[in-house]
Image 1 (cartoon, helix red, strand yellow):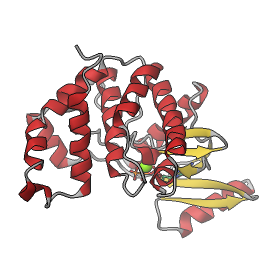
Image 2 (cartoon, rainbow, N blue to C red; image 1 turned 90 degrees about the vertical axis):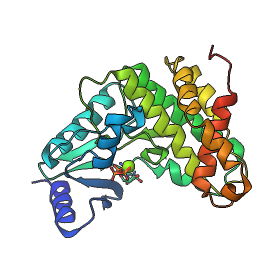
Image 3 (tube, rainbow, N blue to C red; image 1 turned 30 degrees about the vertical axis):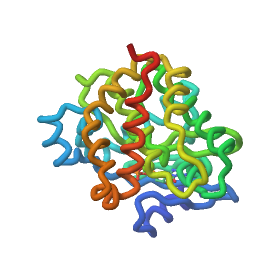
Length: 261
Ligand SMILES: Nc1ncnc2c1ncn2[C@@H]1O[C@H](COP(=O)(O)OP(=O)(O)OP(=O)(O)O)[C@@H](O)[C@H]1O
Ligand SMILES: [Mg+2]
């Protein structure tokens, strides 16, 4: 057994965390333990009545299947030229990834970040997401917390989720984009307002999914009533910032009418 493998196994056994970093010869690596993936029961229930893309339940996988699925997907993406961390080692219980840098969510949430820098990262992230989509693939968990930055490159991580094979790829890509854009509604404390129109336009520009603007507008239409309601003073005071930012996004989508005829 190599000393790398030995150390990885020791780290695996001595930690009760599921995902954690360790250092080998001055280089950082991440251990990800095998664990089962489960569809969310409430989500599955609601999806029967409201077939929204966001509610598509993920498949159940045993811990071994989930590990196999994620590590193979990482290797496949790497061969296709998508920036993903290299799988350095894999066995039945866990796999080891090379470190792919700082979490983009943390970078974008830093309240001192300038607007220019913010969109520098956003552009790189969008290019990586569009690269996946333009190759006819999906991410499955494309919230900004699943992108990292290292040495001028954005990397993509966290590929556990899989879906019924009857769900078409466009639907999964649209779900990816919704998850992505909605994850920006959690950013607070930065000195400027997140420009959703910019993010949407940029994605439409770099991806082959120009028609997603229509899906987004249809998504937004369903919430018009809630936007109206949220303007009522007695309601407004009671809303959390996540909801307010979400409804901001809805309003922006409802105002964006170019390309959406
Ligand atoms: N190769 C890596 N390089 C740098 N950071 C990593 C790496 N792998 C994991 N991380 C860090 O660990 C966190 C959790 O990893 P990951 O997203 O794979 O797990 P998860 O439990 O499926 O996450 P989620 O909370 O999104 O469901 C990441 O958000 C990232 O900050
Ligand atoms: Mg994650």
